[in-house]
Image: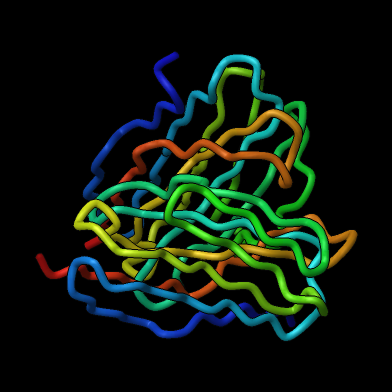
Length: 111
Length: 114
């Protein structure tokens, strides 16, 4: 079955350092979405990537979809304490009506 | 808009009891999703409705789980009978346009089955 893995599982950074989380799928994905969940909160949609090799930016966040559409990454430049939370990717195979979430990367930012 | 509204926020029940979780999607959204989140299994999509019709329920763990959407503004997720392993946070989310549009999540219902 389809699996979506994320690494690392946890990341502690000093405020101002960069952060990257990687999402890898066992199968080719049709699309990929990224979510952020603050501690005790609910997932919040960040972005969706559709095209092979696509790169999108949101202020300090850069999202990338791999050429083979089997992996994706989220990079945060100069982290801030407001970036604390768990970042999830979610994807599915073409034509499938399900959505598989990655295992998540929990980011801690040390002031 | 108030966003996706779930009730109750917390539920503690005894094993074997029936549990009903409720969700009111954002007005105008035509897709509704039920998710379950646990430490062990992460975030899982249980069932997905489009225009009140269940599109995919392959994530529903077993027959003890059922979901309904009688109209565009209300959905329920029922567990009968409940078991301790059902303890989790259950999220409802809605979107306009299906799985591949921005989904808005509710605050979740934290279910504890003792």
